[in-house]
Amino acid sequence: MKMLIDQYNRAHDYLRISLTDNCNLRCFYCMPEEDYAFMPNQRLMQKDEIVQLATLFVQNGVKKIRLTGGEPLVRKDAAAIIEELGKLGVNLTMTTNATRIHLFINELKEAGINSLNISLDSLQKEKFQLLTRRDQFNQVRNNIDLLLSHGFKLKINVVVVKGMNEHEILDFIAWTKDTPIQIRFIEFMPFDGNKWNSDKLVTFHEMLEIIGKEYTIAPARNEPNDTSKQFSIANHAGSFAVISTMSAPFCNTCNRIRLTADGKIKNCLFSSEETDLLTALRSGENILPLIEDSIFKKHKELGGQFSNDFEKINAELLHNRSMIAIGG
View 1 (spheres, rainbow, N blue to C red):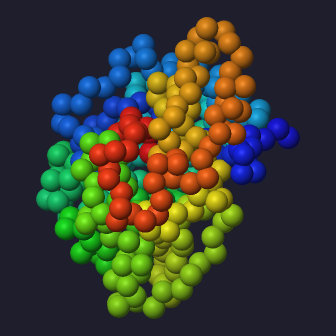
View 2: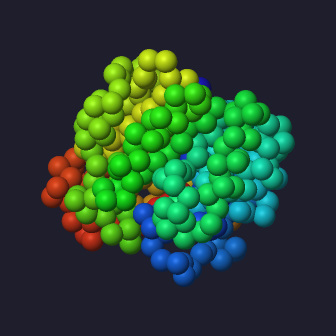
């Protein structure tokens, strides 16, 4: 089996494909401004181009594909793309805000998708509206219940920002008492336009301290390439995990490749370098060497842009896209 290997001998078998930079929510840490200029359609990968690129990655060792955005389900041909990618025989999954999931239950099942990551940063309706600038809280909660009733495995992604929602950490943990979900608390990360600074960071250890005051927590088994550190609480139907990108990064086992909605390969979430696969594809070039070169040149950690000494990071000096333009 062919594999995509970088200079540190890390094998890359997990591809994240952004279907669009468009979204029907306006979360501040992801989208810089309300009046964001989305990519014109001709700059986006078209359905057949997505399938062609995904097929090439699968032929070179990719075993898992995650669809991201923006919000992937706002794309008009999302169902057709999901159907085609479901034929590739890999583990297909998606990250979504769940606002439109009720329209796609059957398509997800038919494509073999049985697990989803759902972004939800508050369990309070008013705060959800403040954070997302949209009144969609009830729709999201109803769709989470709908997915659970259909047997989907769910991970709830919670970006924790000091002064915004850290006091809800225990509310999210309480949700796992009787609900078989995993809450994934994510350290706030710097991207273009999201006004990051270290004062807003709630670290992995601070989260554990908050939870540990109320619950007895135990480490759970992690898979070899997990980005999250997983934990369990006795007599809870669900569990929780922490993605500690800033205070305790996990770059040494990274197996992820990102493909932006405009067909650029990013070998790291924080990489300043991108390789344009879409233009080369449309020109009839052999793009496998471009992919192999991009992966091989991957930095040892954090895109080569900063270290885990997060208090010294000047976010304004980082060269990257906004989160919505990368694709999570």
